[in-house]
Length: 126
Image (cartoon, rainbow, N blue to C red; front, side):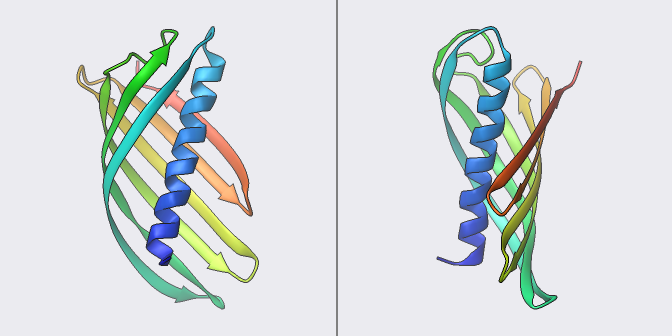
């Protein structure tokens, strides 16, 4: 598996965890979603490792939902900037994403993964 694909897989898991964290903070409910995005990465050698970075652009669609946070059938445009750092110590990934729904409301997501420890944050535009 290439580094770009691994970063992409980490991003998908990271975003899922971010959005599930958002759902957990609502009154109650669960949801299932699909992501589709195109990637554009470049990789440089850095400090005895590699550092791939780039942009993901695509869409997020809710395919099933209970509760009010995410509505079944809702779609959002998704744009993310990713920086990964791969070394003998492991893979660290930083990502920031903006999801924009059809009415123009934005959800800003930030995730940092260090050696499988995930830190999440989100903010919505008012």
